[in-house]
Image (cartoon, rainbow, N blue to C red):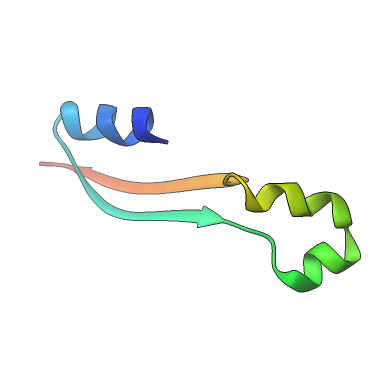
Length: 51
């Protein structure tokens, strides 16, 4: 995650928003294998604009 964010900043982007997806307790109850996703982001969404 740090590499992605640092690269964006280093190449002149301004971060607008960063979101990490984590499963809800209900999703984990239905699919216990998702519990491991609490240790690292399943997805990283970054919104950035060139300044």
